[in-house]
Image 1 (tube, helix red, strand yellow):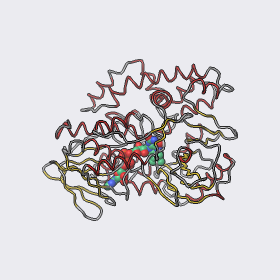
Image 2 (cartoon, rainbow, N blue to C red):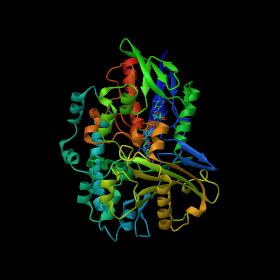
Image 3 (cartoon, helix red, strand yellow):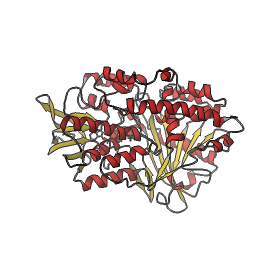
Image 4 (cartoon, protein in one colour):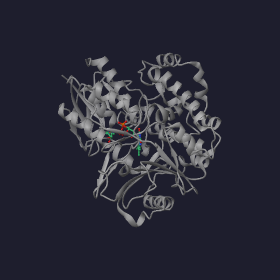
Length: 494
Ligand SMILES: Cc1cc2nc3c(=O)[nH]c(=O)nc-3n(C[C@H](O)[C@H](O)[C@H](O)COP(=O)(O)OP(=O)(O)OC[C@H]3O[C@@H](n4cnc5c(N)ncnc54)[C@H](O)[C@@H]3O)c2cc1C
């Protein structure tokens, strides 16, 4: 039986282990720097409250079904579809706008500012849907042997989609809708890709299609971390070994192959096959010392936004919150243009609030809310010092209190703050970038760090910064692609 080591227990590493453990073809060990499995999809339990640490939106849930099925396991998760999907609070307006999947409901919601919305939205989503289905199998869920092979696959995508490549998401919403609010709302998905609608290609309006028509957003019973707990349970039953608090910092090789990893305590780990779930670009630079991924070169790449996250256990119920809530200011373009490269904390931050206590009782004591607040901020290339984290958190909490008309500060029962420097040091996120490498056209497909190493034939990569990209569904697809590579090279999974 071949020995296989996975470096990192994020969703990418765990999903790969799940697929590869199906027939017990490999003896699998997972080495993890952090104290618990899950990577960014982790858990914080504090003073009777339970918070999902990172991801809170679950979309394209059929990828989860496919993961369990192709790994020979039943999907143990229970999911409930959210409708409204989310709501958006605009500065100076008391009533939030609810985003419904149902076209009739959304038409009514915006009747005062965007007449004929259901027709416009139907056209917009149908167009995005065509692009999604024309590229999903041909390009996104596909391994490439090299650049020519990638270009050959791209050439099979109908030419009518070319305008999507040259336009930005903002161009697309701007030409479709009349009201500024509606334009902003449908361009928010660009932030899920860790960028802004003014920089993100229009092709990513396919995310509007997956959220509003194809699949929707779902709450997972028990919270997002349930996904990790269930996968780990299956892996343990299949004999997969976990080693926590172990960071890989170097390698040794012989005969052109990778044969050993070295951890930060000098421990050595040998195997026949290695999969890195550590960032595919940063690992090549920081652990393998590859010149193409030196700090200088990594810094020049386009990285996604950094997260500034606050976890609050609050006494009392905040009535006007739902599961997903956005709080936006009144200077969208200026904010988007400056936020990612600013060297100071945002003075009037935009943020997102998730309250899983709105969808289940298991997250907070009775009569309380568990609030997860996420504010996109510059990464550590631009702002290295986050000693002002308390100040920024207070600023956000004050603004939030006013906007939901609830005195949050006096009712805080527990609080935790994670700034980009915390995210970087806990999970090796490059300079605190939350979603890894961005999705500019020169950083996707064959231009993204590959899932098979350039030099070592027995080293592979899975996760957000390799193909196809970031976000939970993409990372699950990434595990499928790397499993295909490994089984092609070393043996099949029947
Ligand atoms: C705040 C936040 C909110 C998000 N919200 C959403 C959302 O709502 N929906 C969505 O789809 N996506 C969301 N994302 C993105 C999503 O979390 C990621 O795309 C996904 O979880 C990445 O998984 P991964 O397996 O690639 O990497 P990770 O989860 O980062 O896992 C990598 C693991 O490798 C370990 N590791 C790294 N280097 C080493 C080393 N040298 N030695 C040993 N171990 C190492 C790390 O500790 C980590 O556990 C969010 C991300 C953040 C940060």
